[in-house]
Image (spheres, rainbow, N blue to C red):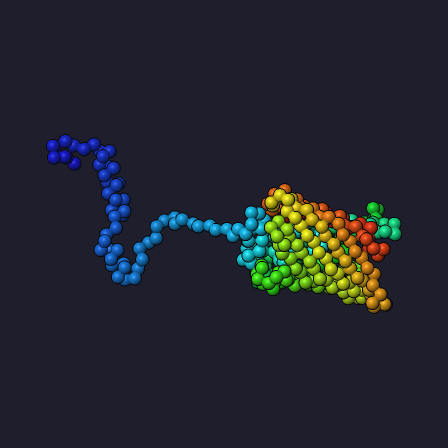
Length: 298
């Protein structure tokens, strides 16, 4: 190729012109083509990599009170806040594993009983939850730790969070025991936020033994928690009151009342460690009941 002056272009310049020509042609939009596409009801192709907008629902200065999930629930409800009291359901599509260690001593000086519980929680659609438990018991320090109980639990929240006061949730549990009659437990769960950083829960409980003496238990549990460090540390208190009778003398109740402090530490976003020492205040109550709990959310 020659210029008007007759000078020959270098070969490298010819290569650049050859490569650039089709790319430049592709980048030019013919106005007639655009008009034809509009007349035919066709939209021009969208630009590549459109911007993504992300919004968060903030209701307080605490991140653990941010609303999350399809039910609009606060983040703190995705971790168990209380040992004795349940609140609402897990967010849909989430799961958690929990390890429980529960030593209990009696007031009559008898041997202590230790319970170890492995729990798997699954957040399901339609404001539902499924829990599976594997439980072992040990009597005294010398006894053998035996896996002798399996439990299945389902929950269903009646509405999205804060649509109904107290966020009522229905709870049903079946406990199958290897060496004792099975148990059925029903609960009505309540919970919410009393004020920024103050969280509460309360349960109404009925438990029935399906065989043997057909023991019935009527319980009220409650917990109150105060967040001291957002998503890290909370302190509170819990109480459990139970009235128990059986078929040999209905209405003659044994009365158990336990109360004590509760502590929750979240070392990382997905984990929580709970320590809840409860103390019996009636003659029928255990002397102490200590709950050590580790949970990991997936």
